[in-house]
Amino acid sequence: MKKIFIKDIKERDSVTGPFLVSRKEVGVSKTGKAYLNLKLMDSTGEIDARVWDDAEEIAKGFNKNDVVSIKGFGVAYQSSVQLNVSAVKALAEGSYSLRDFLPSSERSHASLEAELDSILSSMKDPNLKALMESIFADKEIREKFLIAPAAKAMHHSYLGGLAEHVFSICALADKVSSHYGASVNRDLLVSGAMLHDIGKVYELTYERAFDYSDEGRLIGHITMGVELIDRKIASLADFPRELGILLKHMVLSHHGQLEFGSPKRPKTIEAIILSYLDDLDAKVNTVRALLSGKPDGSNWTPYQRLFERYIYTGSVPTHESTEATATRTDGKAPEPDDNGRGTMSLFK
Image 1 (cartoon, rainbow, N blue to C red):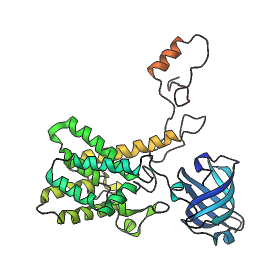
Image 2: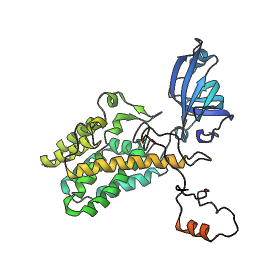
Image 3: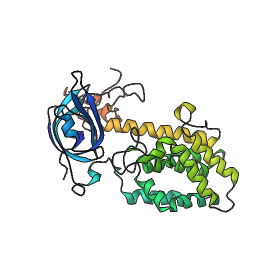
Image 4: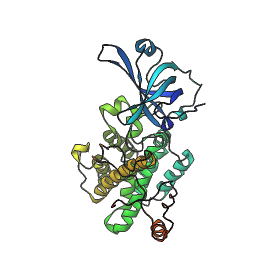
């Protein structure tokens, strides 16, 4: 049973235990000595690791995507912690549970499946409902959709992440379509939300470490999604051709800009809304992950290349905490909030 997790590893910690090898590369140091550059992962995250001594011999004993037992210690490197590893041993199949090594949604499979069926049952348009039910009645697609991550890295990069991302956008789509009324086709918007990343069930591999399939690298999830939709539409009698075009346009354009990988830019109101909701949900999920991993003693994350800025992680003063600060007369600092953090002002 796994006892030490990556999220808990600190500088100078002695680390012995099992991890999944998600990267294995042989490098050569400035002195000409071979070393191993590894990335290890478990359900709480990833950590870089190096094997400096006997690297070539140790490398023979395991492969990428193996679960291995390692012995090492934590060292500080470029504002983070990595492992210096002295021993690596591959573990036998069946001696571990992969759930310990892959990040997973906190929601149960049954909860995700129930939400999927609830969204499908909410649809009123008979053609879109028939198409959506046809797609998610496919046992392989349904199971992969409920298990797949939404990305290899960045946002929702955990088992069940794709479904979480899609359901979040569907909830936003409901609110937006209600707000704007008849100018937005609610069922078309929700269908686009459900299917915009459906190609990722085949683009990504997630039986071991998250990676891309050969088909995913060569074709990509947008094209794969449109092909899937075309196949399912062909199996339905008299599906309106124009409706199919509008739906596929949403999938083709959901990245918003050509430079972000969209073959087309969004040109309908539903496609425009979807592209913004997709971007919003991905970015909010990324920030929430940064907030949950807040470094001790700092109100700021390391520099985030995605946002081209640092992200503030301090707490926001509440009405209650502001009142307590104003009325306190004993000179003591205010009590920490529910997250264990005292409040502070950005403007001091």
